[in-house]
Length: 150
Image (tube, rainbow, N blue to C red):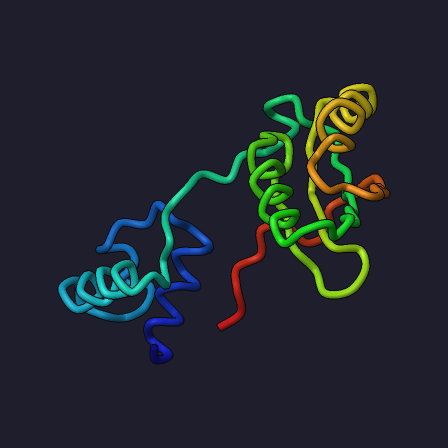
């Protein structure tokens, strides 16, 4: 991957709806080489897909919390069972396995505090292998959906 590929990636992260013609102009390439590079980036997996970034408040998900999960390490299957179960919870927007304690960080969005409490009590606390959950409420997103650095 060279500097031109990185420039293409940066432009697409800022606006994934660019036409190949617009993209080519922004990275100062003719259309055919830009299109070829774009296809290569997609085929190689550098571009995993295209999507719309939706404002959570616009769809009634104004409340965000970070949930830290610590697991009981009963068997090697504990991790797999937890990860499969957490992936099935639609309100979990991100789940990251961490080194050290806690074991996981979950980013959760719900309509309000009452909906979060219901999700916490009925789904999150019942995930397989959970020993302890702690959470903190997001006051404000300062940096969000930032493009990867070049």
